[in-house]
Amino acid sequence: MELPWTEKYRPKDLSEIIGQDKIVERLKAYAAEKSMPHLLFAGPAGTGKTTAALAMASELFGDISHDWLELNASDERGIDVVRVKIKNFARTRPINGDFKIIFLDEADALTNDAQNALRRTMENYTQTCRFILSCNYSSKIIEPIQSRCSIFRFKRLKKEDVARRLKIILKKEEVSFTEDGIDAILYVAEGDMRHAVNILQSSAALGEVDDKNVYSIASQARPEEVKNLLGLALSGKFLDARNLLDKLLINMGLSGEDILIQMNREVFNLEVDDKIKVRIIDLVGEANFTLVEGANERIQLEALLARIMSLKT
Image (cartoon, rainbow, N blue to C red):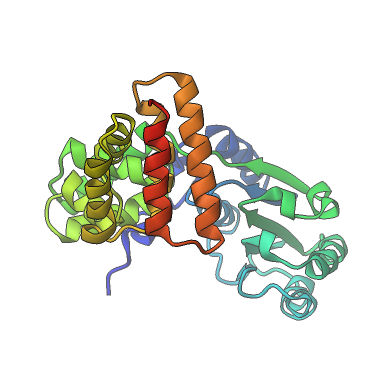
């Protein structure tokens, strides 16, 4: 069975990682010395944290099957995992190198008790084991652990870097595409390479990678449709705006929160005064809060359109 493209085209070494040049440079220095401290990778999803950890281990050990333990802390987050599974692996001697590596993905999901137990394990077994912790929010990692790690902050990937990688995959897979299709993936993925590659594979399964297939698979409205929705409301054409909202909710199956998120993005592309943009953002925030509290999304979105319409009356 063929691997999904996210795994099939995952960079195998540090030099293949894109968009994180300064981080790669620091990791290569550790690999050259065949030594490293405990590491903490923090940043948004799909920016290369897991890939960097795997590539780092491969450059240090070659074969990582014996001296590598990967755990997802969101699944195994209690103190027993630290006391039993992690401790038992850390206390044994490495086979291929001078130390083993334990990779804790989504480490910000660990409970405080587990993190406090982990910091003692990191101290006691430094001779035989190094830790790489990966998280989206470093603020959720306790200070004692942060002070024991060298911190790497991953940033969202630039559009041109993601586009270049996608085109390499398309060429290898011999899939036809349009530039509008690539632009649509970049819009939807927002710098998340994993999300971009998943959308690319799903679009390719339908045939040509074009904007129509991309937005259909991603379950997102076209940017121009959301911009038009806001424009109609600002122009006082409430019924037209309501009909377009119906199309997005019913025909396309979007949720109210999906529409609000896209509204928040497209406000900045409107050709209106900045004061009106600020008021629209404020109104979108209020509508989002009411939806989170359990309000009816259809009523709240229509009320939002009515409030936006009143801004220019």
